Amino acid sequence: MSSFQTQRDLFDLPEGITYLDGNSLGPLPKSAVDRARTTMAEEWGPMLITGWNKARWMDLPARLGDRIGRLIGAPAGSTVVGDTLSIKVYQAVASAVEMRPGRKIVLSDNGNFPSDLYMADGLLKSLKQGHELKVVDPETVAENITEDVAAVMLTHVDYRTGRVHDMKAITDKAHAAGAIMIWDLAHSAGALPVDLTGCNADIAVGCTYKYLNGGPGAPGFIHVRPDLIDQVRPALSGWLGHQAPFAFDLDYRPGEGVSRMRVGTPPVIQMAVLDAALDAFDGVEMADIRARSIELSEQFISEVEAGCKDVVLASPRDPQARGSQVSFRFHEGYAAMQALIARGIIGDFRAPDIMRFGFCPLYNTAEDVSHAAAVLCEIIATGEWDRPEFKQRKAVT
Image (cartoon, rainbow, N blue to C red; front, side):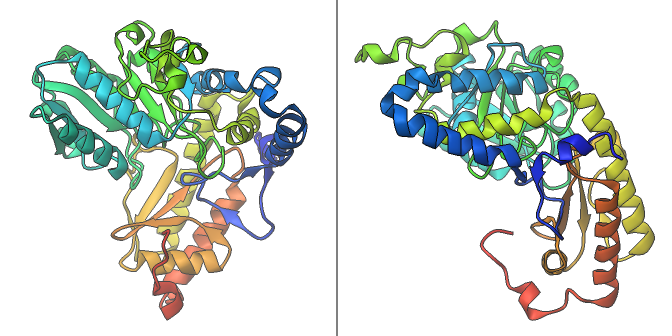
């Protein structure tokens, strides 16, 4: 029996489904249903608005921030949950640019998640101060960190291939050039060990609906290094980031510590679900998750390559250089993935030709891996993918 069998039992995994898409949306934790019901029926229902005090709803962003902080190497009181990841990216870039007046470049790479690039570009255009979003190849990021760079904004794990940036080396390079370092941990948090403190990262953001299993639309989070937080002026000065929200001052005064990075009213029911989801990580070390993830991904690569010569590994072959996912290229990758899903094996597709498979030791097993590899090879070998219904693109791929 897997050492993670106890955690697997915490999830509602549909019968007959092999789920390898937790890198896009984690499965439902069984306890989340009761937690949401409790929040609605025993708090919102009888308490009404008094639930903000009686049920301590207002404390959820900080409390959940600390639970996530443990998984990403952040000290207590330096991470807060709320709003969406895109909003948190906007806040991070705006704060970084303001902390480096006179510098006009925000540096990123073309492996970054497009939404991060959209948010940064939109912000810089709105500023109308001559800022530029410079996007380079991932392999050339370090050499492009020069003294005119205000901020370096990167996603730690590439969402398409799983390639991992060297967080410490790039952060050190950014600091040597006087730039602010921003990390997006959307494909890292809950999947592999992250040491924000050891890497001396300035700002980090992430989402909670992938490996943290918080559910569709679960809120994002933001971390700011404790010694920097008093220098950060929130560009999005929301009322819950105010020093005294219920004083209803007409002038904004930033709150103490990372609470100033709060913006809007916390989504209480969604946060209750996230709180339940994070229980799966209690007593679990990220190093153990990482070790098991590598075992599963190495097994998958070996079995797919042994049984199918028509796919090409898109992820780094070195397991230390990739996150908790494996991607293969296939000329009809979308159709092949739809054929897999029709057979009860769920991964996903990213343009132009990448089939993605996520591995989460909290619920994935070696048996899942072998089954998925065998069926994938069969679908490719027989041409089962070559049917009109599998080629019809859906809204979400």
